[in-house]
Amino acid sequence: MSWQSYVDDHLMVDLPSGGKLTAAAIYGQDGGCWAQSAGFPALDADQAKILVTGFSDPGAVAASGIRIGDKKFISIGGIPGECLRGRKGAGGCTVKKTNTAMVIGIYDEGVQGGDCNVIVENLGDYLIGQNI
Image 1 (cartoon, rainbow, N blue to C red):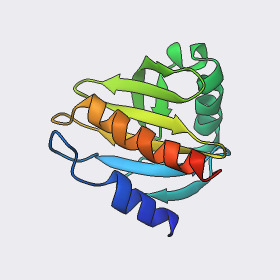
Image 2 (spheres, rainbow, N blue to C red):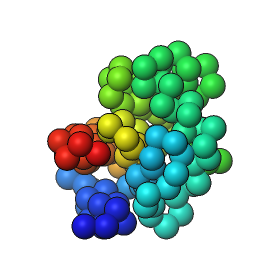
Image 3 (cartoon, rainbow, N blue to C red):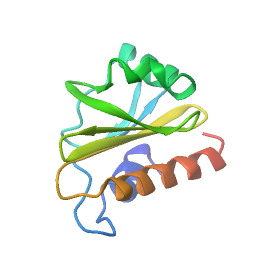
Image 4 (cartoon, rainbow, N blue to C red):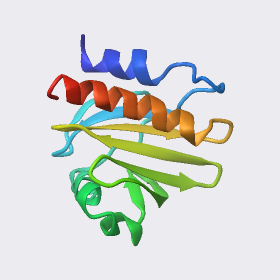
């Protein structure tokens, strides 16, 4: 299965409470894009580095926020060492760390944050199980 198939078939799908993610991607922890949906704001290497640091040191993103391309989300926690969660108005994001990558989901108004968390974190857990 290609990385693009993971994004298209596992992230950009109908969510349990309705709606879909606005954008999703899988990036290497070095900032390299493995696959992304249309309209995903490009994550640069510096932003990727800050996200990776934020997994082990949540304070790294608490002050500056979670930045994905030109979007900035207020950090609302997550699970230390595993995932980051952010909000921006009625929308938000979830970033799940795997062994070598990050699974990222972005949602807008009308989508429940919990649905984004579940879909992104489940794919991340699957990839961890595959040693990715």
